[in-house]
Length: 163
Image (cartoon, rainbow, N blue to C red; front, side):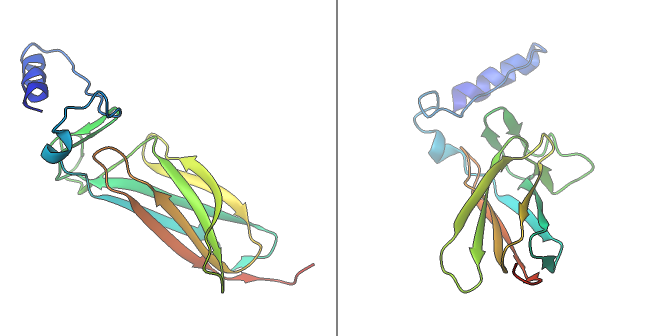
């Protein structure tokens, strides 16, 4: 870990850019996990409209972000003491991360996988699904190296006659 920090400081002094890639465990330093704690992520999620008409689309959208106060490295994303957070923001959005969409019908204890989507470059995601029955929609970020997992959910009542 100290070697990477020293190399980064040397690159900054020379005016060059250094990109740290820690997505592969084989490339990571042996003591990396003990030195760097995971960034605290937040997943905002909304399923709309509420209530929804049976057979009509439901829009599933949200935003994935991480606290600016912490240092972390994940793939090509690197935040050190909020150096990429603008205008005194508390959170930095996370782009190109995988979000799993799940559905749990009312009265069931089982979650059904619907699909996976990726966040856009600015951390937002959006998809649609057909309203069949009332229940809970859930978006899950499984986490990544140095990023904690998070989830958000929204209950939607479906109205209308079955045909």
